[in-house]
Image 1 (cartoon, rainbow over the protein chains, first blue to last red):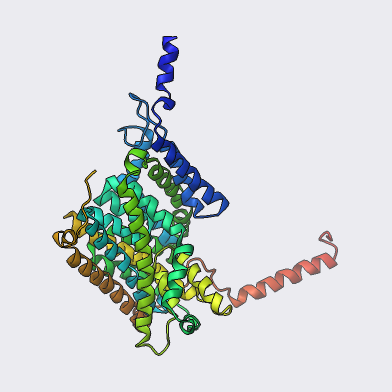
Image 2 (image 1 turned 90 degrees about the vertical axis):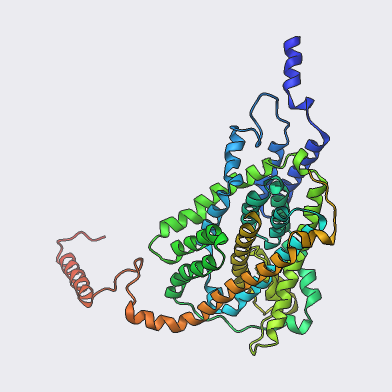
Length: 375
Length: 91
């Protein structure tokens, strides 16, 4: 009988809290949204299941949780906590990104820069609320709308907030089709939304090969803190565009990125234990995250309108919203909103230019915040 | 967990405005330089082409020589002749 009672005391039922139950429900909601609504399934399924796994209360004396040194989950989480996984994901992203739309219309790169105002205004907002500089920097990067960048910077600046920041970043990336359209319509007139842009020019293979090398040199020399993320992004792109390393590019954009995504999503989800995640700080982070996306969208749209004051060939201001680097969701949102006004206006290819520039911009912003706030 | 106390003084205590303004300027500068480089690249490429002429793409097949086409015709003619003459089985 004593053995039976001892066994009962080692089950998770005896130590389960309402917080753990709540988090398990949240994990189930993520999985449901991914499967039923097709909301970022490649991320929400691993994260959702990781949340469920991470909120089974650990048994004293057994190394089971993400935070138990030497446990399996801890070893997988090492890639997140030490910032290994995000650069590998950027390698895969570079190997699947086509920069030709950006190369064919370089002025649209500036829209990707403008959208990063969401990062820095959210940084200021987080400071106002009382977060430390490092914490505010990690929260601000949510506005970059880039999951790997958010995880990378949080791991460096505020590892105790990594779970909340990662969940906020990925949740809002999945909600881009909900958050962006009202802001885009509010800040543009019908006439502006109907602007048709000139077709992009053809870009030569030489340009596509030279760009990742030159782009990396420019970005890394200006913001050395961005070396890791930007370097891997452009390295992956060179593997793709050089045409002599196709099998490496193929591995990077398929098998490798899938493996890292599984491990990263699962371990980030498992790190969101109720005790560390269900706090008032997490609620504030979620609120700031929504604000950052809204400000980033507004920043891109308004800057496009500003540029139109000086341009003969006008930019459709909707394209500015694609500076929020949720690739390719925000570009698709631009296409969708544009087509509601004019079904024959195809903005997707134009929107991809600020979209990929935004990836670059958020990586550079992360490098700047890391170098300023950690040193 | 630290208790958060909101206040404008928090922003200035952490050099918030300076970091935000400087950060945006650096992001803009980096992407503006990249944009400028991209816009000048089509003008730089002809100079590069003089120094490094275009080579055949590795994954593209080498263009076939005219003699190959004639050899194929000869082979087909040879096979047809022998089939008509009965030395090759008909399909």
